[in-house]
Length: 137
Image (cartoon, rainbow, N blue to C red; front, side, top):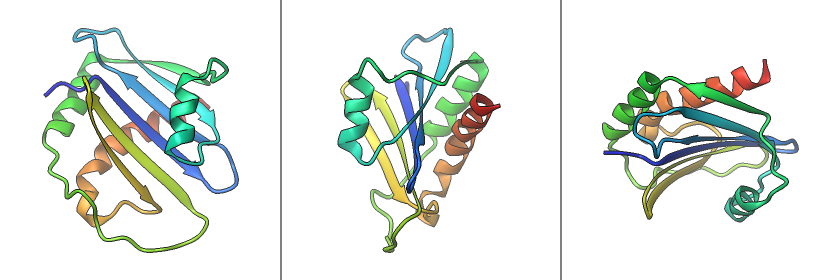
């Protein structure tokens, strides 16, 4: 399985969040992760932000081909239920992880903690969260 793009967003309440985009369309690199800091209230706002010319990255990180291959291998092994049980709440942080290949894509969006049914997504989120931390240092 080849993934063209992985997008990870973190949107806390009442402050700007982060969007990380890893473009892997080229099979041999170079690979970069682009990190944005912006307010993204919903999926429509995310789509608008992706197409605005004023959306400037806070960092562009070079990603080693071995790290990209590790992400691809992790994603290839995923077996996720479509929608886990949900609970209601106010305030907190929303997360989404989108995998794109050609015209197909899958988005896993949640509020607050990663559901037990989606724990296999944790390694991908951890890697991309680490890139956000690197961008802020």
